[in-house]
Amino acid sequence: MNIKEVANRARLSTATVSRTINQSGLVRPRTAEKVRRAIQELGYYPNTQARALVSGRSQMFGLIISDIVNPFFPELVKSFEFAAIHRGYEVIVANTDYNSERMGGCVRRMIERKVDGVAIMTSEIDSHLLSELAHRRLPIVFLDVGKVKPLISNIRVDYSKGIGEAVQHIVSLGHKRIGFISGPLTLKSARTRRSAFLKCISARGIGQRRQSVVEGNHKIDGGELAMTQLLSLREPPTAVLTSNDLTAIGALRAITRTGLRVPEDISVVGFDDIELSRFTQPPLTTIRLSRDELGRKAFDALYETVEGQARAGHEIKVGTVLVLRESTAPAKSKPRFR
Image (cartoon, rainbow, N blue to C red; front, side, top):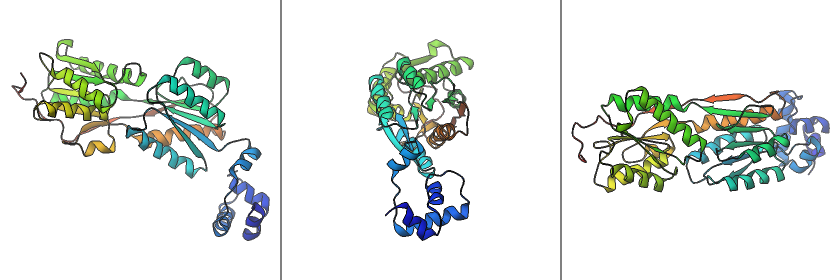
């Protein structure tokens, strides 16, 4: 079956059918609907390779993420892919596992597949790769690590807003000894969240003696280990904020293992608001960073650049907000572990 048969069924020219399939934007909605109906009736599948040869585009975007096991990222992929399908694009997904060496391989794979643009939704990337991508004039959108240039956009997350709300919530509950479990400090996003916490905690008059910061790995086992470290301190914190929800889940496990209770003995706050956070025991108070918004805005930035709707890259802002559930409560006057 070929495009001519579709044209005959729709009683249109092959040129009109071709423009509709290639989404040129020059076809009237009623005419485009005739083409889509003919395609559906005939069971016609356009030859994407042939379309790429004609248009000079692959109609594919690359999406690079850090950790496919972390529920945060599949939710982001789902949003990005939904937007891509709606616009007639395919998506190639690559996973770095927070490894900068693997990042290089992911980028090369995208270049070999001749994608039209790449969304890099991770922060483990070095300057050599940035130079290579810039040299190839490939549209890119970064998450928190890019500098806006021609063809390059950057999504900037307002971590301070959500973390500030979380710190204010914890302080209002009477907590004075507050801990923080960061992500790997090799990641810019983890350093940014840690800095936001320290700034917010200092602004509320809590000195270094009453704050404890330890490093995790953004995974459950790292959260458990880091929380164990905090519990071993001479004066453990009565409330702990974490750099992501998986870390918080690990912290919940460590607290329960020692015979303490959340939130009666220790309050815990996560970050991300992954779907699973509503079903932990107790349900997790957390800072929401919308994966749906991230995915949509990352796709839109690439699409607008590739389609010529944006002449230059631009900064895109995404907010955060505290979500209250049951893992936080007023501080006890005499904590059990004192």
